[in-house]
Length: 205
Image (cartoon, one colour):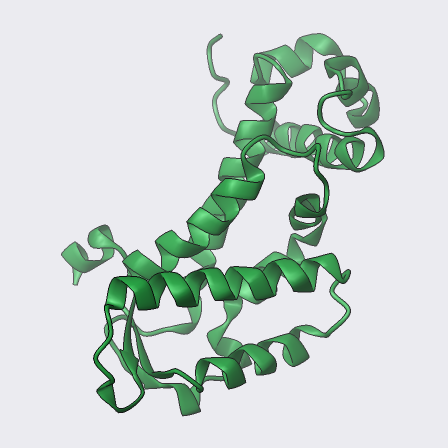
């Protein structure tokens, strides 16, 4: 299949298919969702669908990749590269990632479903870990000597646990309330955080 050229129109069409898939997963699960269901819900025909996707699995993969890539890009918006920030100075603006998840809550609510986007339950937490490993450096309180690989994993998966709980409650706490709890917890074991971006960011600095 030849990939169509990316234009505002094709991107909008793909978004309609993605939104239809999200809605159908919540209604009947991924396995029972058919291409016919998707095109009917999105109000397109099959030929238009197959212009963009080989099957529903390719659509699901595109949706998952798009959302998780956006999650990675959202992280650094609040930080100046290489600047060390004391956790006492963290604010709601430091957690643009939370706003991204809330703004795309229709997608991220899919973690509440067992029959959902393939690999969502593994790749979402792995993306959080990747962000913590590649985009941040941390210092412990009083420079307590610990294995920073363990520390980063502990912190990343702890944050994912809080995110998944927040999502499971239907975003019961406001963004501000949730972020404040995260900040207070971070201050119990983390002294500073430095945004370093990834390797491509570093090469440009």
